[in-house]
Amino acid sequence: MSLSQPGTLTVLVSAHYDVDIDIHLLTSPDGNDCLNRAHSEFTHTVAAGEYWITADTYVGSREFPGPYMLMVDFEPDPTPEEPASEPTIEPSSEPEASPTSE
Image (cartoon, rainbow, N blue to C red; front, top):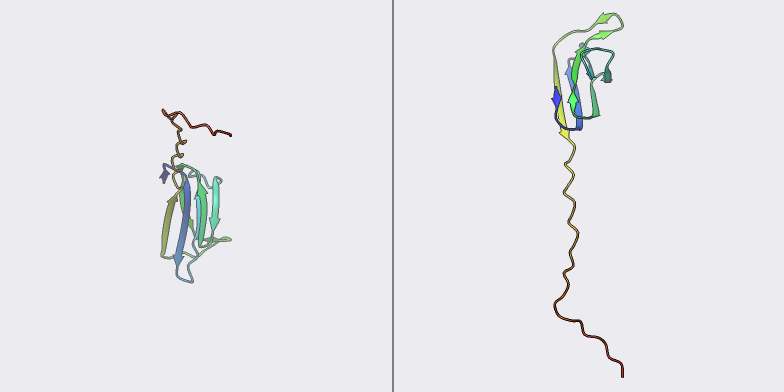
């Protein structure tokens, strides 16, 4: 997937109890570029860029395959608000009254 802005990525996998699917977040198709791994769910803060999500079923040397549902959610970081403009003070055209002392 290609993300055009930073944010929070949540990945969740759901499967039958006898199916074991693990999910991985990668920065390339190379398995050595893993940012996060979980058995069923993870949340990861990401920068803008390219990411890959993989699902595998290995436990040791044994597979536990089967149907699963993969859900991916991306929440972009909030856009910083425009800075408030500085208040401007306009000089008065009327002269200020001076206090008088008696």
